[in-house]
Length: 156
Image 1 (cartoon, rainbow, N blue to C red):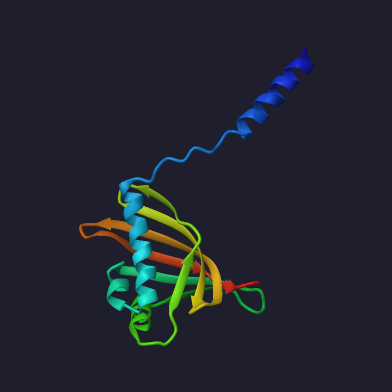
Image 2 (image 1 turned 90 degrees about the vertical axis):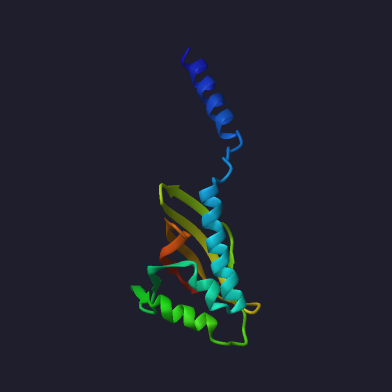
């Protein structure tokens, strides 16, 4: 009897683990959050500070975290305004942040998005990591209130 129970449980476990993962289609809010994130990266590629600016809430914050040469964790705050100005300042290279996926979670008027990326200057990969976005839904739509990224050199 124990042997039969063992085989039944083993078969059931194998059967359940072999079932395809069920994905629900993204909600309208999730789609709108993705549009804001894509607009930010489109603005960066175009060097268009106006497109980038409309993605951010007036109280937004930017942070970067990485390990320095000594292996110590560093957290650096960056100015949103300085970032927007840098995007809009003419530069020869295209700032191309290529994203691998976007995982968005929404509750009421708060959204979070986990976005792995590789940043390229033109076609040269410069660094990679993950962007962790927090967005809030306002009268004007979804706005980025917090963006923290990890940053490390691209390993070929």
